[in-house]
Length: 488
Image 1 (spheres, helix red, strand yellow):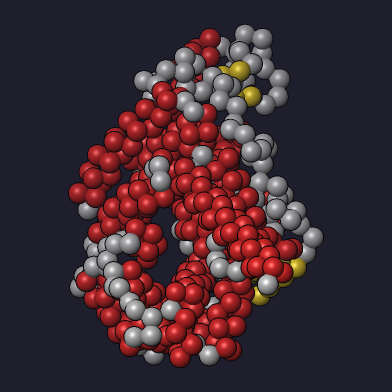
Image 2 (image 1 turned 180 degrees about the vertical axis):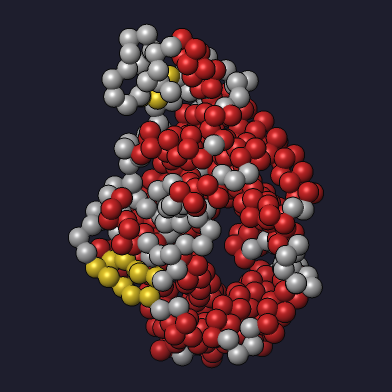
């Protein structure tokens, strides 16, 4: 279109792309697959930068006639859409790869566009501190809520994927925009409940669960009855199938959340039967996770590989190769749940020394620490399968990737942030774990403007500060004891 020097085409170009930067301008040209793909290409060469994209212009390839401006300004909505495509959709392990996958993703452009603009502007405004841009992001979010509601109400069988993707992207907006990890996760969980409601239209579940495991763990909310009904039904459907270990993993995670809630809301006295019993229940759960690990290895095997890569991008030069992205995510859910189970046992050793001495023999105590460190390292090693550090060459990232199902880009990043936090703050892991997990979160924040990453980084900072204070206090205590011994 820009090769034609006629004034008619120039006017048509400006009408489509816009040049005033006004929030009220509509960016319908990006709704098509070809326009969205070109928006991705325009920034792909600089996608490794930690700074936001150049929001003032879009360079045109090749020579341009003198009558046509060398720069075409993007209006605010187009900036948001471009940021979403480059930072949230493409360049992730589960991104669209073929033209058919891209076309499928943008199949419901009218509904999808506002959702994508909302997420993109939210991330971009967070990085730039632009309040006006943030207001437009919220406006697009409200419009997306209305459009998604209309799409769901239509109950069009052909639009099932579009309905589900729209709802999940609304949840993504909350973790991009939400302040405070508990608040963001709680609000996102509301949209996840909506996605589950959409699933009910095609799945024969008697009662589908509301939300996911991480929101209930992060917010301390009790599990609803729907969780147990759905898992029981899935267990029946998958009877005798090797992949049923995934359902058993979900049941073990439910058990962890139940026991954790019981512990948090009950007062125990060291040396009493109740304290002994809660420790034994966590030991039994730990044994269950041990058995699940063996079954997961049989059904969802993976290999550990080594190579020369930027140390900030690949932890200790190691990376996992999974067959499918779903298996990679399943493994990380197992890891964080098993870490938290052993973390509770470590806590019991400190606060209930009498009960622990009766229930946790010395070899078992050593196993708790070794299990935590091993699984925390596995989480960090697995990161290239879930997210690509910007310092990695795109060609290099191809060997890390597993086959994907959803082609949904960054949808898995919020869960990865939780995994990083668990691994970095696990008890007695090397300081290197905290450093690497924290730095990865910082890069995600700078690249994507996801406030959830910033909030979890702050929680990690508080954890490190607490450990430093405890270490300093312990040092002072040892010095005082040493001084008393010398006086004596």
